[in-house]
Amino acid sequence: MSMLTRRHLLRRAALSATAVTPAGAALGAVTTAAGATALAGCQTGEDAAPTEPTASSAARLQFPVNFGWGAATSAYQIEGAAKEDGRGESVWDTFSHTPGRIRNGDTGDVAADHYHRYAEDLDLMRDLGLRSYRFSISWPRIQPDGTGAANQRGIDFYRRLVDGLHERGISPMATLFHWDLPQTLQDAGGWESRDVAYRFADYAATVFEALGDRVPVWLTINEPKTVVQNGYLYGHHAPGRQDPDAAYLVAHHLQLAHGLAVQALRADGGTGRIGPAFNLHPCYPADDSPAAAEATRLYDGYENRLYLDSALKGSYPEDVLADLGPTSRMVRGIRDGDLEIISSPVDVLAVQYYTPIYVTANGGTMRRWPTSEASWQQIYPDGMYDILTRVTRDYGPIPLTVTENGLPTPDVLAADGTVEDTGRVTFLRDHLAAAHRAVTDGVPLESFHVWSLLDNFEWAEGYDQRWGLIYIDYPTQRRVLKRSAHWYRQVIADNAV
Ligand code: IFM
Image (tube, rainbow, N blue to C red):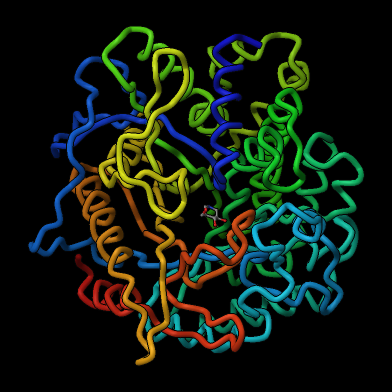
């Protein structure tokens, strides 16, 4: 493993000490003006210096007819009911119950109690006017031990949820895996075990069989990079490992699992569309030096191309493979035919954008923009434009959906029952304006999902950070629409920001 890789890993480890949570950084590109030539890729040249973020504008930006306005959640972060109706344990049950792992010792045992309050939450979605709801299915609710026959009570819950969405005119978008691996499979090696990719395909087939007639869009694995980096490099996510060699073998097995699930849907004769969900980050050189350009290129390989190239081009980036080296567990773990499986044709690509990354000449990173309450997140709306246009430029006109974008804000429930999260309104307006600019420049963006619908369990941060459009008063589980929710309802009604 090269020096650059080691610096990359060390940089990430340092970030994690200050509570990096989600996946990481990105390498993207820089752009500002509306030119279609503004590539959002990994820019390494002199003209890559970022400019001021997009200014807010009073002009209305109309989105395409039938644009899929949505919001997103995931199972472990909102459902609670951790021990009900036959649900098995996941790695996140184990991790969150391990002292010292989660801020304030929080767990997902109750979370937003969505498992019991889903009907109320569906009504709130309808009241907001959502057209799309992206949620995840809990593997240990469907297969408590990660294999074998389906737990009917688990299936029934998601059936009720999906039926409730249709009754309210909201289109379901289901993620098969949002990090809650059954603990039994972790005990058998977790994602380091190639066999787990095949167990995932079996689980996916079970879900398609049960819900395939009611779910039009499937996403396979949420943010494989976060599992790789936070779970296996820095160890502040489940399963809490710090083993770079294992991390990239895990990356390969997650990609393999993705491809096998795509094939399972096709084998099932499913009519639904399917694709991966990647958190992508535009990476920019921190200065004009050739060394920064070179370091940015490799950084982009680890952050973006490792996942995009394998799924959409059928190859891993040569620079990353060379950097990992021929004796790495990942490189040794790639078998003939794997990349054909991984690049099984998909119908849609889900992009999750939170932050840019600025890479220094020595392979480190630096902060250029203000951060949110999440110290890893620099607020840079133009990065949304850059990453969307880069994906279209580099990977062709595959339909895109933004499945996550948002930030945590210091929300307080006032005595008059309001929550004034004006920072979230500004953030979403500016990021939607950037997405609109990408659409204007030809990006086939179909939908946009705010992260998140509800305040929820933010992994290592517990309940400390609030990411929702809807405030959860955890002691009472009362739901309160924040100012941003009212604003978003108007955006949806107007089909414009
Ligand atoms: O809460 C997470 C989500 O589970 C995955 N993407 C990033 C979000 C914010 O950190």
